[in-house]
Amino acid sequence: MPAWIEYFAVAVCAISAVLAAEGKGMDLFGVMVLALVTAVGGGTIRDLCLGVRPLFWIAEPMHLWTALIVAAVTFVIVRFVHLPHRLLGVADAFGLALFGIAGTEKALANAAPPIVAILLGIVTGVAGGILRDVLRAEVPWVFKPEVNLYATAVFAGALVFVLLEQSLPPSEGNRYIGMVVILILRLAAMRWKLRLPTFQTRAR
Image: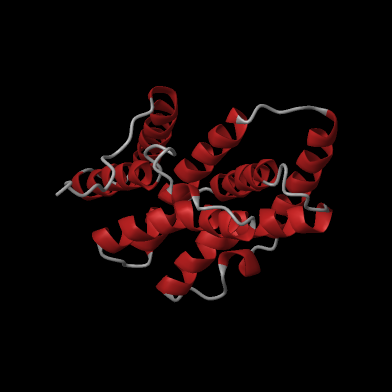
């Protein structure tokens, strides 16, 4: 996995965290904490499940610096320029795509079975956002019916990536195909309100 993918994912997730803090009355410190949790939370849980030591952001502290610098810059920008709320969803979609496949690929590289690798890809993609939303006292996006095809998009992209890795010779193109699948599904769901059926009981 090229290093730029994880760094870009960290940066995008930090941006989404700052945008998500809007209206919560957080100061700069609170926004920084939110950005760090969002940027490294999913990967931390992944590495703990895989038994990887040291954790990725301890082995490469530049992940932390990337999240902090990007969060600080975004914090300053949004004080002077109004960014559309939709940008939060787009930034989050890129974070899902990048971290989802990064997590799946790292799990496969550590000899995880395919179904476990897919699950850890989902965890890597969505866990940081769950922690972000819990800290800002919101229902996590992944559990909101109006947030369309969230974890489902990661599952689909991770599944495509694993199938390509198992059926074709290893190729860098496989990971990018998986990322594109996640990104297209998530953005299409945002555009056309695609969603899974919600749980409802039959009236007696």
